[in-house]
Image (cartoon, rainbow, N blue to C red; front, side, top):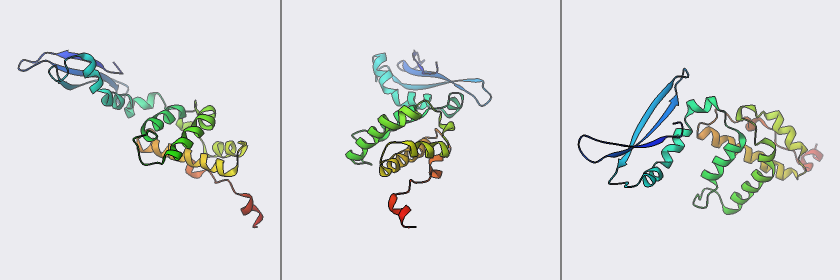
Length: 181
């Protein structure tokens, strides 16, 4: 029921309709039953066609803020959501090379280290020390820090999390800046 169940409901007047039913947890942990009409059997003659029409609604159901509190989102789940929404070919907000670099950094560095960590357990000092230990150029570490900030902004935008701890992570200083003093 948490993922939704599709049923065919009879109407007194007019054709039968397809309904999606699901349950949410209320603010006090009590289950709240919900339902929404998808369309008539004339619009969707087969259950599979009705199920395809409701995929966007199912994402909303599974990303319900009340349900998120009971199961905290991990960095790997956030990365997956980010890739599906922001790094697709039809999304033109970022260039192809940026999308490719983001995918590579996520796959090689972010997910292996931070993937199982819930969003609430990511601390700015932990990220800062991890970035210093990476066997990468300082510019690459700065790009990973920027990507982590973009990830947490994405989490805030979709209301998966309420803050961006990466904004407090200090940028890695370059060798030129150290010698200028």
